[in-house]
Image 1: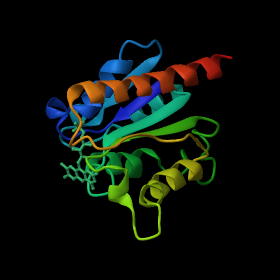
Image 2 (image 1 turned 135 degrees about the horizontal axis):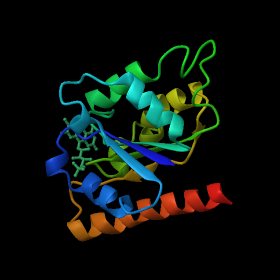
Image 3 (image 1 turned 60 degrees about the vertical axis):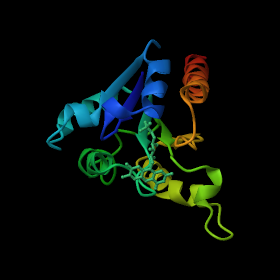
Image 4 (image 1 turned 90 degrees about the vertical axis):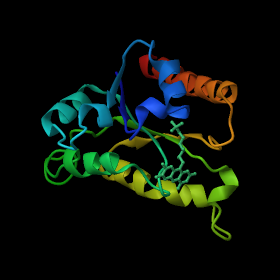
Length: 176
Ligand SMILES: Cc1cc2nc3c(=O)[nH]c(=O)nc-3n(C[C@H](O)[C@H](O)[C@H](O)COP(=O)(O)O)c2cc1C
């Protein structure tokens, strides 16, 4: 099962993330949990989230980039749901062996993220990657949709088709 943890503060005005979800919604074995719709009061049901994660083989964190990071409810979800003794620490092995895909959209283009000589985007991905690895998740190459500020709907749709292809390819290799 592929579980998409979706964190968009304004899902009704999304273009990029909406297109991505539209391209994968009909795939078998894909479950979407839209955090801002489930928890408008930020009162996360930790047990329900952990149960959903336990059912998943591939976990996706999908969100728009906000201030070079993630929307606040995504961060709160990580703080609450990836708890000690469950996701890490003593007996904390619930996520071991599962895979993680970070699916992020950005307003800026690829070069917007350069920091001097540093490849900026890879630097920004490190906290997410480190979190995944710390919980024993296997880190997949992120799916990134850059330049959403300047993309028209047709271009977004073409990018979103690549998202669908990533999920299909993963399902194919997982099912052998
Ligand atoms: C509060 C806020 C902060 C943002 N910060 C960034 C940023 O740091 N870098 C960037 O490239 N885009 C940034 N953006 C742009 C969003 O990432 C972009 O609008 C989003 O990925 C488009 O996806 P959507 O059509 O699904 O909303 C920001 C947007 C908002 C609302």
